[in-house]
Image (cartoon, rainbow, N blue to C red; front, side, top):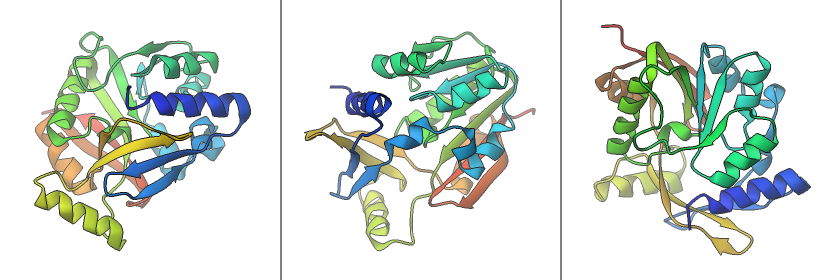
Length: 242
């Protein structure tokens, strides 16, 4: 089973019925509800930090982890050329069904099937900046995005800062340190209709950590859009001109 098979099931269920009860379970037992309707929102419903970051999109766009295609559809409506990718064939099928013109099956965490300098903007929304799960894999992704973007390349992305204000989350991230893992490395699985999916890692990043990591891979932090870093924020990274 792919870690995101249940996610595809829930997206299709919501698309067809308007309802889907999807939950996310952390490896310490913490269980939260995933609001599937979020993946079908229109621009007016996007959070402010997403709207601010989207203003930096330009040229040819690659939407990584496109899901139901909400950002691709918005940018298409703005007249932009968008290629949307997702690791799940069924999610790609859904994006196409909803009107995304160029949606393809592709992985974000390995060698990507694109030529050098092919895109001007890469979008990684929905916490997808940390989709590769670990710091080494995150750095590898940044290098690959550097390869496939033009000299004026930009990354527009969202993530969350690891929570230190809630005791349960603070304990979890402290345990990560004790286990030799990155502080913001979260191990999760999806739970849907009585089924539990395969575990996967998601990397959460504080802005200062992101700035340092990105700089080592040729990216400069240009903009941070946030109201509450623990709830989510957007960044704009640009290729270092030096």
